[in-house]
Length: 270
Image 1 (cartoon, one colour):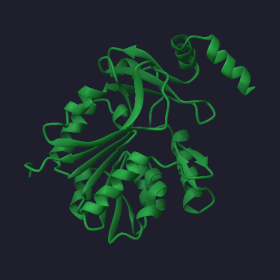
Image 2 (cartoon, one colour; image 1 turned 90 degrees about the vertical axis):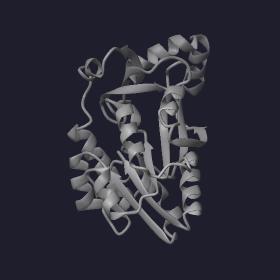
Image 3 (cartoon, helix red, strand yellow; image 1 turned 135 degrees about the horizontal axis):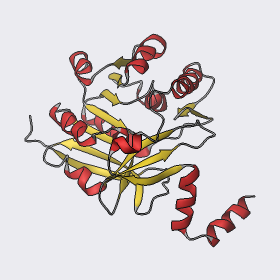
Image 4 (cartoon, rainbow, N blue to C red; image 1 turned 60 degrees about the horizontal axis):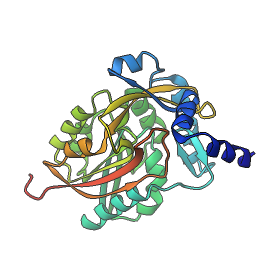
C-alpha cells in the first residue's frame, strides 16, 4: 500500500496533490476575514475535543501513556528540539531557574513533554494560561507542585518570577494575533519561544481553514498563516532573534513551513 501511495504522489504534481489533500484534511482556502472562515468551522470550545484531550492527558499523568499531542497518544516522547534548546538556554542563563508561562497550553501537553528534563532545576514552575473550562479542569485534575493554571498572564506574573513565555501552536488560532504580540511585548518577559508555528515564507498573511484528520477528531478551525518576516518584525523593536528552526511537521500549502523562534529581550529595555 505504501508503494501505491508513493507512486500516486509521483504522478500527481505537488500543487494539485496539496489541493486534493486539503479537501479531506490540512489547510485550504483564503478568506478575507476571520469571521467568514469561522462561520464554516466548529469552535475550539467543542466538548468532544475537550474530553479527548483530558482523557489522553490523564493517561500520561497516570503513567499509562508516555506522551500526548493534540489528544493523540504516543509510545515515546516526540521532542520539539527548538523548544528544548530554548528552555535549556533560559535555565542556564538564569542560575537553574525556569518559570514558564505556557499560553494556550491545553492541560499540560508541553509540560508533560519536558518535565523530566528540568525537574532537578533549582526552581521549576510551569504556568498554563487557557480558556476558562481548561483552567478549571486543570486546577481540579492536573495541577501539582510544579504545574499551575491561570485565567490570564497577569495573575501568573503576580505569583511567579516568569522568565520565558511559550507560544506553542497558538498564534495561528488567535483572531487578532498581532494584538496578542503587542500585549506579550508589553509584559517585559525576558525570553519568548514561538513553537510549531505555520508561517508563509513568501506572500502576505492569510486566513485559511484547517481541517483536522478524522482519525484524531472531527473539527475545522480558522487558522492564520502569517508571513514569517512580517511576524518577526512585530517583535524586533523590543526583541532579538536568538535562533529559529523548522519543526517536524508538514503543511500542504506552497511556500509555507512549520517553524520555531527563540527571542531575547533587548538589553536596553526595562
